[in-house]
Each structure stands twice: as C-alpha cells, then as structure tokens.
Image (tube, rainbow, N blue to C red; front, side, top):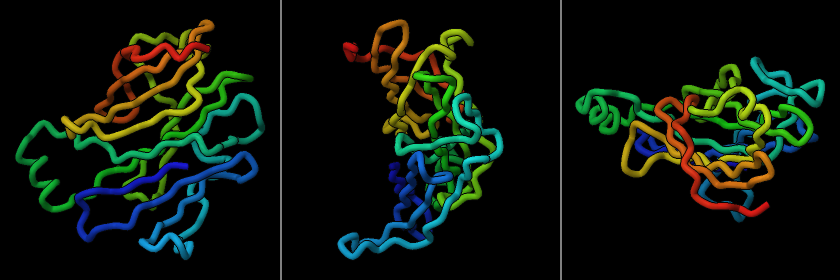
Length: 195
C-alpha cells in the first residue's frame, strides 16, 4: 500500500491510500479520514484497471498489481523562484505520481509510473521509468521489487527514490533523483543488501 499526504494544498486535503493485490483487477483508491479506529474511508474505487493504457505486462494476459507501490507529489519543476513561491503560497495543486510493478518476465520486475492532476485522478497512461547509465540490457535484467519515492527535503524541484535491486547476483540499495518522476539520475549505491 502507498500513503499520500498532499502538503500545501488549499483547502487542505485528507490523506489518500492506494492499494492493490494480485486478485484485484487494478489499484484501489480510498480517502482516509482522521478517525481510523472507525474505519473511516470514503471514495473507495478502482482508479487504475488491469488493462490500463500503456501498462506493460510480460507474464500475465493483463497487468497484475500488488501492494508494492509508491505515491509522491511531483516536483515543482520551475526555474523561477517567484513561480515556486507563488505555487507554495497559493497551494497550487501538484501532480501525483503513482509507481507500480512492471512484470518484465519471470523473476524480473521494474517500475512503471502514471501521473494524475490530483490525488483522486484521473491517472494517465502508464510508462516505464528510465534510469541514466542503465542500458536496455541492464534494465531488462534488473529487478526492482518496490521503490520508496519521496519529496527531496532540500530541493522542491526533485524527488528521491530508494531502489532495492537485484542484478547479476548482487542485491543493492540505490539512491537516485528525478526532476520529472520518469527520468532518474545515475543511481548511487548506498548499501549491499547481501542476497
């Protein structure tokens, strides 16, 4: 499951929960209300179907999503400090990026992303992410089973990704950054996960 709290929006929004399981035909969206003890969710619906536009699936006949998803607000992506300040001040809504599993083959997983203008959709076509310095062969034979996407706390114009990966009998936790949520910088190895 992925939890998304959108900051700086006016009026303030409730957090949104996204989830999926192999048996569910898509990704489920639910608005979370303050009193979770009573199970207060609203607007529960499937927002990305198993046959969603652009979805890549090499194992099953339709896309299979699971709980290994991540959601983040898109970077501001503005070169003007005045525009960034104005967006923050007015609570200008930022796009939401939803990262889902991409089955490239048996035991090979990667990431695909969909964008929406608000946390509630509508979500556009899915597309695979790209990672600088990783060619097609490396991308095809690397498994990223899930990703943790987060706003960069020191730079509103980028997001950070933690990617636990398996490639060439090595398991490594990488850190990478993106200005648009699709194209990522050359990954920096942080930790040998010792497969």
